[in-house]
Amino acid sequence: MDLLTLFHNNPGLSDTIEGVARRIGRTASEIEADVKDLVDLGLLVKERFGKLDVLSFNTNKDKQIQETISNQIIRRAD
Amino acid sequence: MVDRVRSGVTQLDEMLGGGFLSGDSVLVAGGTGTGKTTLGLQYIVNGATQFGENGIFVTFEQMPNQIYRDAKNFGWDLKRLEQENKLRLICTSPELLLETHGTKHFLDEPIRQVKPRRIVIDSLSNLAMYIEEKEVRKEAYRLLNYFKTKQISSLCTWEAPETIGQSLLTGVGLSRVADCIILMRLVEIDSTMRKALVVLKLRGSNHDKALREYDITSEGITVAQPFTGFESIITGLPRRVQLPRSF
Image 1 (cartoon, rainbow over the protein chains, first blue to last red):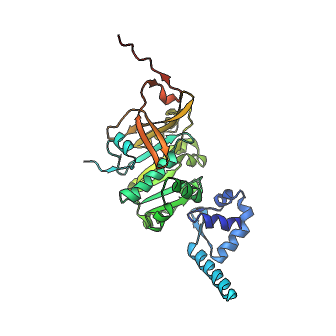
Image 2 (tube, each protein chain N blue to C red):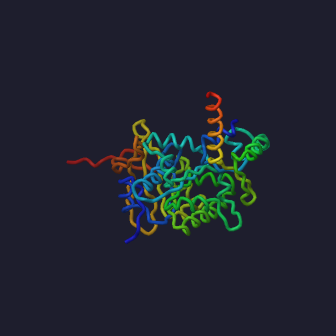
Image 3 (cartoon, rainbow over the protein chains, first blue to last red):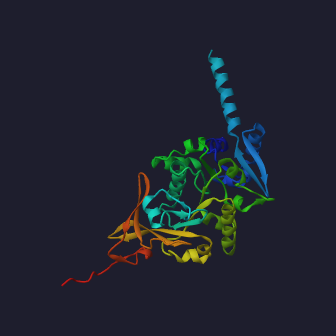
């Protein structure tokens, strides 16, 4: 949740896994599983850059998921 | 006629004889709280809003949402400028700027998308956390030349301890790498902290050598008149000058 909030509030963040972890007061190994889940969901993009893995936020996917959730809520309310 | 890049801070541009020289590397050195980041933001925002020059702002320590908020306090809507593709705020780790992926640079893609004429690196001091001191000059030189080859004017901030002033810049050799150096520092006068700014160097152009007082107002940095009646302002602890008695 911290990870998702971090990227959601800071869409311009594009950093190494260690760098991202530092920004939420954690270590790379602590966030590894969450990163994998969010990458699998398509919310985070992981790219290899030289020796480093870089994480960035997929704002299009975020909008898409938010719209889906919003539509589900509207439909249920109807 | 030399092409000038105006900061948009009128009095500073006057000190520089019209602005920075196009494509030059500017180093803004100063201690904590002197307004280096504010000046960098002002330079980027004014470029995009007043001079039709897109910009990229790279930050290492501050989070984008902090920068959006702080900029808003000065009346600068960074999010809107980003939506208009006039600005890109990039928050990353310094090691990524040092890393090359084959012939590709980490900033290649944002530069291709935004087509900036200006870039701010806040702060170059953060690079020093990832490399040995003797490597700082070499890596800074490489990074600044990368911007020059892309015809982008760069402004880098540098955290210089208040007590040292100019000497720290020469310590890592950055004074030779930068084309222009602006020093911002806090000065204690009559038990009040005031702010002084000086253009230490502007390669290839004359410039104002006076130490001027500046302030961080609700509209950003404003530069005022030179300090008068004091000496040793650059040390941060100025002394009043005894004016000769008139007979």
